[in-house]
Figure 1 (cartoon, helix red, strand yellow):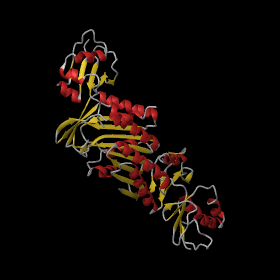
Figure 2 (tube, chains in turn cyan, green, purple, red):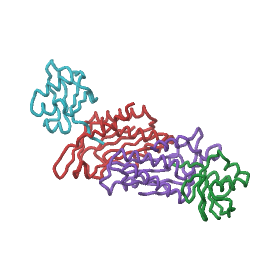
Figure 3 (cartoon, rainbow over the protein chains, first blue to last red):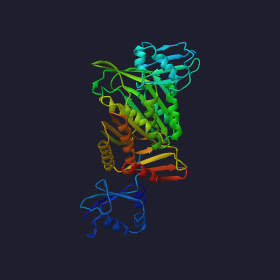
Figure 4 (cartoon, each protein chain N blue to C red):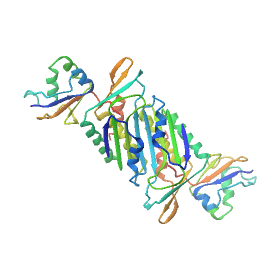
Length: 85
Length: 85
Length: 150
Length: 150
């Protein structure tokens, strides 16, 4: 399954990329699986996405919970808690 | 005792006057006494200032309660409940 | 603090900018604009005439703003109330409050409006197709002001 | 309803007038202006840079405004949020709500601000004498949004 991954703000800077379109292994079905897969990259990925770190995720531009299912061509965004206004 | 009496809005229209400076009899010491004295004029005065009618009073530009004492040259205003804003 | 009772229109941009432009501690300005509506209690309104008690009005408004400043962080505030004859869609009143943070700005602005409605000596008279009538005070306004009593 | 994310400044007069001038049912416009402060958490701020998630931002703001419209009488509303680099005293955000009565206008305006702060994907980075830093989300903002849940 292919998804479009977007990173914003501090995470965009730390990951040194704003987007990627990875081909995910079959084992990745939910957002939680995707986060596990990203953590396996180690380094800043393991660190920033560790349990207990504050970040948020959206699928197709809706804020969602970690048990959400992923679908082909979903736009998945991962970002720090928002600070607008 | 002489006081300056002011009337506003609907009461100014009904009393057909916006102000007067009456010489009050010695028996008038409080705002309640003044209201009694005005009611004795009968007609619209008795009607509009009757117990149970909604009106407000201020002495020297502060909203006050009916047992407030009057003093020489006080500015006493009587008016309907306010409706600004 | 600026308190004004005037017949002329006011400039919202200028009034609000005056609250924050010279003070970089201001992070929030809450403002309220009250407008003449073309209908009130089921009757059409062609014009609204506002009368006030000169002297007491300014004093009452200044006291309400000072009271708000004792309850919340108010860095600056402006209250402008128009008098005279106004038409539907014309602004009647502006209350604007500058604060460091939005919670204080919102609370102080709404507090000032609620007490302006119940304590400041203004009276409205409407011209309707059936003739002129003085606007009655609303019980809901007394309730709105009463909820700030703690 | 107007939702805009833009780098340019906006005209408060024009934005607020657009909410009431053509609609004589509007009796109240509550508005909020958020501004860049020159100090935050004890550090001086020389500039503030705002980043957002294009597409999601507008969608999130439209949903928040629609949610406000289900809770209160909202005749019209405008939300403008700036992005890019801003200096102290510059406006960041405008939320303005038009209603028949002031209670609805105030509540809807504050509700929209509270959820904008916690749900709309904007991020602030401050330039301070010690360098740049991303602004941390505030727990007080989560509490402010949570109080609307009934």
